Image (tube, rainbow, N blue to C red; front, side):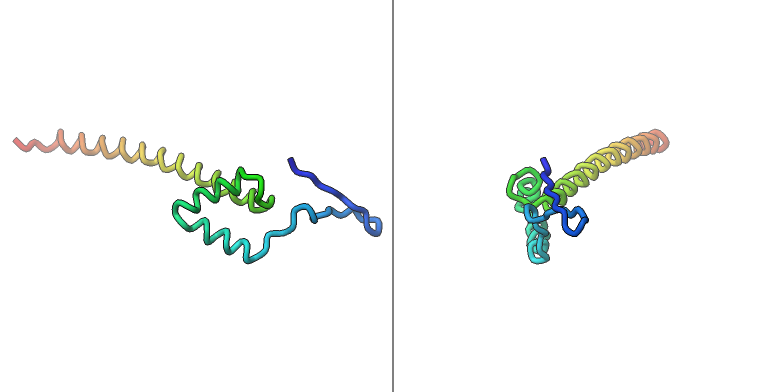
Length: 101
């Protein structure tokens, strides 16, 4: 659930971002560094995506990374099946065309 608090200043309605401050540049650098470590990165992405302590922008980043990883895995499986089927067909055709006896 996302809670937004709005305040009126000088006739303009403005969002109060004090509940979710911006992620600092140093925090993003640490985020990318931790994400690059093989096993730790996967664990941290899940912690940031589904844990309660991450800031909203970092949570959204982690969820986007997981969605892109899922899409990549699905595409990899689909192309792997296509390649395996095509390779099998080519090998079968070649073995029928050339007799080694």
